Image (cartoon, rainbow, N blue to C red; front, side, top):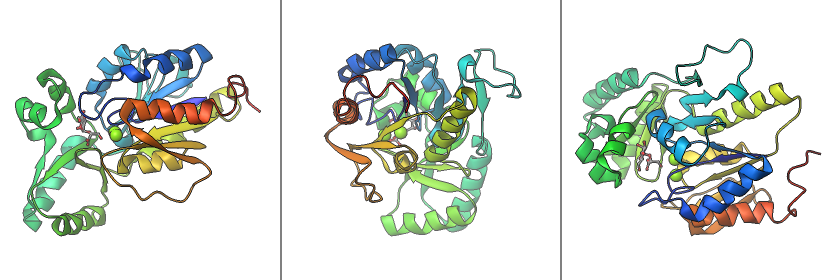
Length: 276
Ligand code: 2M8
Ligand code: MG
Ligand code: MG
């Protein structure tokens, strides 16, 4: 089973980033041989720390809402680009963060749009806005393929600016706190790409389960067989996949456990591992 999971507000608590309620299930999934694959708006610098802490060094990951896909050695295929010094193979299907910043500044100036880039805040400002320790906030500012935004205007103004960005070929989405701008990427495309890579490597389809709490997770939830929408900061209108979607009552890592148990305990402990 491939478990594709959002981090902030899902596996990690929205406010203090704690995942301890989910730790027993992370161990259990590892023991079953199921891969937990983070699919997040966070940066590769943030993920480098979290993958060690969560013991997810042998599974792929997706950062910046699909702009970066990282593969460990086990997921490589002949013909892939050479691995980086940390052994990870990187794919960057979006647009570089500095090019996005330049486009955003140009469009904001042209439209008189009251927007600031998260990557251009100081570490202390970023820490104050997110509740992250300053060292983690510094890693969150190291964008490679997306730009989280702060909008100082009203909602109709945002909707207008959004249309301008989308008209210029950019993708706009929302996490728990920020609005995010990327090239032509989203979490769903990254999930499908990884499921296809699994098929190429193993000669069969993977079973897939996805968990997320924000608007940026909707493409992820649509790309998996079994979806868990975790109660979060946004009231989300979700495509009517009622048979395949479970909405949790609890937020954050407790909701993550609730959703996993809904799908995995339902079939009995053994069935999920086999592939029929
Ligand atoms: C931002 O991402 C979250 C994800 O939902 C958000 O928009 O609320 C990103 O900047 C990420 O890098 C950072 O770790 C996170 C901190 O809350 O905020
Ligand atoms: Mg989230
Ligand atoms: Mg996220």
